[in-house]
Image 1 (tube, one colour):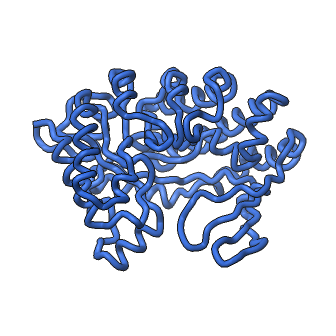
Image 2: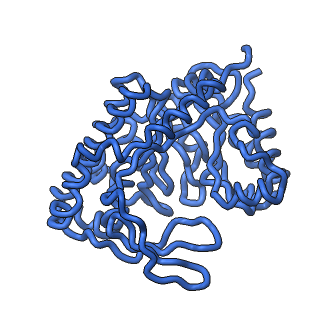
Length: 362
């Protein structure tokens, strides 16, 4: 087969149709960019440098108070604590990128949601201000000029609710006030689709939709499949159905162990699962064996192997997985999380070269 463009390749991989090689994409922590570009000689455009097949744009902002500037409450040598536009208090590391520590959440009841947040989220007069049209336009142009697969990226409802009320409150409310959770999920789903409609009508549709939805932790999802069906499935179906109405495939990112939720996500319309986090208990080969005829995959390569900067260990990880999962044509290479600065630039170049050698369809 002749060499495909990134757009052609990813389109085929998402449909599990024959391609010239497996796909390629990656995420990096911000301080990895700084380290590699400043100190290790890496060019600034990682997409071009590594030959990624796709680009994404995250153009919407559903923070409740969109004009609110975070207020620093306290800091020490290593961290700073802020109050954000969702009335949430979060502690962030100053010396490296990481997920923020949850300190407190001001929206802790249905009454506060209905009084403070819902009127802001559903105010259609502000909807345009929640969309970065220019960023979408420029990224779409970049992709078209290079024939890359272009995706709209953003959070779905679980990843919009928990930054507002916190994981503990959200999960407890599924038991003590289920109607509140259902209302939040449907509100965010409807406003997400309204924002997409407005954006796509004005700037044109993307090649795919990528939802970020971290629904698991180590060894388990945050909810049972039954609770997924009750609280998240209707909102996922609503948002995924809109994508499918435009003939757009749906990629779902979730950190953590989410294998028990895969059946529900497939029923909702998911086409590809990403990131398949090994240290949380996810197993790319097991998932491929179970779902490979119905689902495409991106990720599942243990990033801790890359931490070692040991080429032999990288070879072993890739040789164990890629020859198997490439068989169904539905696989794109990606680590099982994001690449930290502890991974050397030369190590990552080797990783890409080896992965694509193994991933060719000769």
